[in-house]
Image 1 (cartoon, rainbow, N blue to C red):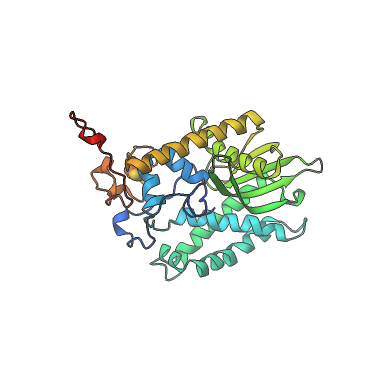
Image 2 (cartoon, protein in one colour):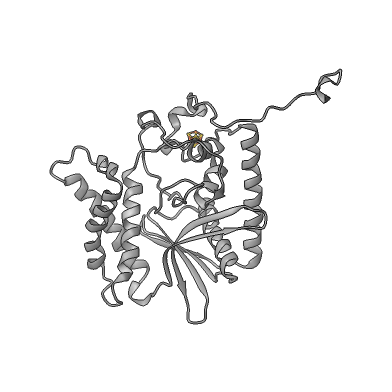
Length: 315
Ligand code: SF4
């Protein structure tokens, strides 16, 4: 799992069970200056499609969001799944994966000391222990879905970035790329939530098509298979075999999305759109859909001269 903003690096897509976070009113003040976005990631594209105000607050205002135990657990599990492949085939066991959990948590904590605040009243370490046990369950679940001893990933945590002819830059991280001896490419993404219902499946697969588009643009090969591996809720694997028409359709959709974002940048209008993730939104306290007031729009909106009846506006 990757946490970031669309104009920097992509975050992981929301899982079916979003992380609970405290209200934004408790968050520390923003420290990064507001700026217009320069690229799209799957997560931030998803934000804009879900709620333009959420996109604005994350990407333009860059308001900080408090860390969540669920998202952090996802980050640690992803790190373990990446590192496990350092061991040779045959040694990639559930025990080996569990043994990596605490070191990976320590490594993350070193990078982001604020995560220590996730377990504030945990003098005896019981809370952390429960949290790690849940992460172990997710890892154990993975072994029921895939056998890492039969896999030799070509890439892990691969950063991809490309620029379309229109100038739109797309970027993101791919959890795993497998390449068959025949050259066929499979893109794999781990989700620590449970598999979504059919209604939301398309949204999760959109992220994978986004990666497929970027890889196709970079390497000239249409990935043979897109595979979502859900570790939560008993585990599930969802696959899709894309074709060129799929990727061109995603490209058209992203261009339309980018145009809509440019339109919102020009007008400063970022409507709040209620959705099923509002209860987990870190910015709910600032959201007009829930009686809040967003901060003043931080970018300049060009003023438009409205022509008068006498034509004075034409001069
Ligand atoms: S609470 Fe819901 S409507 Fe408001 S900004 Fe967050 S996602 Fe958008």
